[in-house]
Image (cartoon, rainbow, N blue to C red):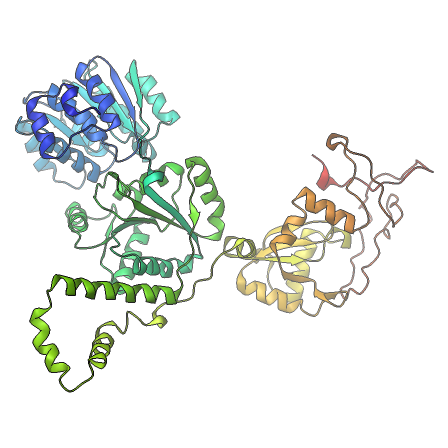
Length: 617
């Protein structure tokens, strides 16, 4: 196994590494450090989050640079937190070499930054926006830098910093060495490399312990309204919960933090609208474990490096596969195990399938914790806590009062009374609410938060989309604008409406039945929906109506004659499809312009059904 001593690192730096318990380099460090120490080529490095990229470029900078009065290396980072973290990490690695390292970012005093720059900075870490501001104010000179480093380049591109990066790049020394590090390697990054970096060495490292191996990945499918209830159950059943919860927007972060604190959980929020001192204070409280829950947006959480995070919860599903990787990379680090949980709504099921496919990971569907099971877990935790106090023998100061309490009472009653006083609300099942578990059937029936309805009327009854909507509006009062995703077939249709409108429509059509049994409009089942989508189901459906699927040469096979029944419709025939027997709903007459093919002229030959448009390729 390679050690840092074998990478030709100086004694001072080795001493600082040993002090931080850095013994063996990570794969990205082992490949990049020697390459940068030789100083011959530009480097593009790709490695997953949490694999030691900062030390990979920070150690060579410490070895190559000497203290001076001007900026010698510029490191761009997408967020303030990451910029601060990089500066602190490099400063801790240099020992007593004396290099001046500083992070500058927005919402920090220009005056303080300007004075520090005038005194002299050797390694400058900053966000693109603030670096641009100093360049425009002529308070920063980059014409003599020796190293230009882009860290987390993929995230900077996602945040729209490309124009700022190009402007900064043009104002730097043409002879500098360029280093670019990213968790992913997109086409946009490679375009930048081709345009600005010139000749470079590409270092791609796959971590020997991937996030999937160290992290148990699970998803829960619930309605939006049930997410907070599910979150409470997960926190209550996980001993030592210490996690980061991701939301999409700042408003979502503030709302969730407020809800958690109202329920007596200790939580802090992190997003871009907070003042820098607040952000640093909240993050430090989380690092010190004074709070065990940190709610954050993707941007605010970028660069957060906190040890021992047990859980990452995607309260809102990530927008892409790369962001999912970045999020769950906050846990399961440094050889430790972690848990990543994603909440999805029924309409987001396809997104979860996409994440599993792109990231090539097995994300299992979780079972929603039952209320009784949650209460039992909390009781077990209490019992374990009491057992721990007894084993540590730290209850001696309370024995005197315990003797007084049990003097004239049953000890079991005394213990029960104490539990009631302090844990009654914790073990109260009414504090939890029911969660509707989403299955394949309910996902279909409540597509996108709506209810899917089956309508036993189609084109063969002479209905068009417009006339069908007019009929539903006339009978139920539900307006056409409130009906979505209308799918019309020959014999039936599907519509999507809200749950309230679904009740109104089904009630209005309850007495209008087919064959005196089933009403014309009902809640759809997944099996009904797939009958016309699946070729196998469609063949069965076609045969049940008296004929086989029309022959298509490209599909092969033989021509199958229909078993029976109705003579072939002639051009303009309006009586080919008789009214359904037993239907209490009137059949709409066909329009005179509607035709179903040309009349047959092959007398004496077998008759086949007309080819339907729905079967054309």
